[in-house]
Length: 461
Image (cartoon, rainbow, N blue to C red; front, side, top):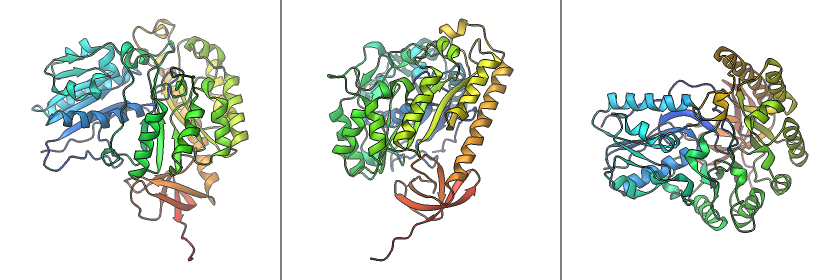
């Protein structure tokens, strides 16, 4: 059978910003779900490929979709897991579906994800699409057995669904664990709550069991993900916090070397999480913040719940607990009504807050959202502002990489021979090691935007 080639649409550098989410969006679609860019196929089985657009949560669910489709006996199919965070993300997904139909006319194409959940009729109307599944249905084998043209239920009443996989079937080098799904907030530019439903938390016991299984299966780093990760626990008895969850996970799974968190809402980061940052080295010193803007009026018009000073206070408190912590951020450029002065406040926040890893995207209107009715910023201005933010992020990222020369780092290895440090810096170690392995290196330089490290040899006993 002919291999599918990667169908990554052209994209802005970084990840399109999501409202307040822990699910930071890539806006890309790849027919691959492993770190080497390959699509694994089981020996003797017809191929099931998954095209994933969007967030890390979608990436986790794509793994489950493949397994549920196989459980149902589906063969020779392409599953497209869409994103709805921007109109551009949805346009790219539709473009990819049309291209896939041209290049693979005999294969079944099943579309799911947030865009399909929000507009099932629009996707069902595409001649290239064989079946449409909702965000809840895509995680069940029964949906792949059905002959219905569309199976999309009411996401607002969908119960929380575990999306764990056996460790030997997970294709990433770091294990992504869905702790939370959905969102109760209504940012003016965002439609994701209508694709994901209300906030729903996975119980602590289920998460502990899943992490234990992953560690036993060879994973050395677990990443907690969610649509609004810092909202975890608000719907559970006693309303436990994300910090309490992390402390319990690390206590009950002492053999887990590294715990990392997906995107955090700055206003929801709790004291328990900051305390844990200070006294638990296994919680990685890397927080990715869903900031979106650095101007208070823009934040108000976005219907965000934090202000500029809240971000500055948070990063200061976090650095008091862990001086070496590194921050990433989602930022939107050219939100409606944004003036040059407002944008300058966002641009200055990169330095004022000491942000290192930026995911920048020019504002993209979503039909039906309040922001889409606000006076727009011209497209060329949006793009220019996004470029300025990316340049600021590149400058800070390069400065951070230079600061790591002469230090020691521990990496989780990827399948392509690179790894990520505790601070999420990309590193190419001068050693061959298996994917998922922990490797300690001394950082000696920078090549092609990546740190280079020499392995630390163990002293003879």
